[in-house]
Image 1 (cartoon, rainbow, N blue to C red):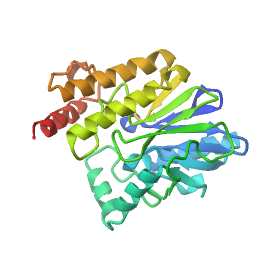
Image 2 (image 1 turned 30 degrees about the horizontal axis):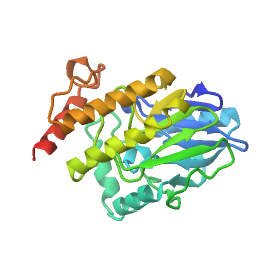
Image 3 (image 1 turned 90 degrees about the vertical axis):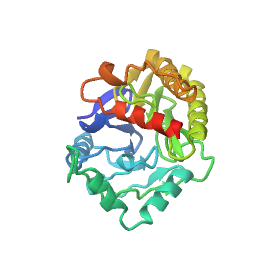
Length: 269
């Protein structure tokens, strides 16, 4: 079910890893950001939009992870955007004919096995490099591109509403997850991205992470500080007291400790 978090901005939270789909109302319809995970949930979202009399006029994927690239036929054929680097990464992924099969196999051990619609996965158009705003007929949505977590990752600032859609950053349930490749480079890219988000924090009243709880203005800087402390601890080879790890983590999210251990193993290589 859609929940309003600011004027003209609504969020649909999936049960699967608390994934957040974001709806922004425009003049002729809505911009849909990272719509969701399971077919039934995205279908529910389509029903909500139909009841509101709001067609989808544009879509946006914040980054090229599979769970942010999904779509449903009932959402229509509106253009779906991402940054140029995001779209290039998706094209490379989908150039492998077995890509969707591997995603489906990866999901077999999860509670959403067989429920994720992959037919329309990743059909996004890359915006020209340096594009400042999402092209659509609605409130200005600024694109803040960085390379933390995934190539061409974008946070979106809905300027007139004071809402920051953070993608897979600034979560209250997930520790920062670094991009694959050289760990030292990934750490510096993450710290750079946090500085970019910090630069707009004063204009943010609501932060919506890709996974986790929606936060108010007082939580934006706190989440930036928490992510930065975690990444700096990794860089310095120190233990982290991050509350998202281990026994202090929210119930049902114990696996974030595995993510943390995986990052430590990468650093040790």
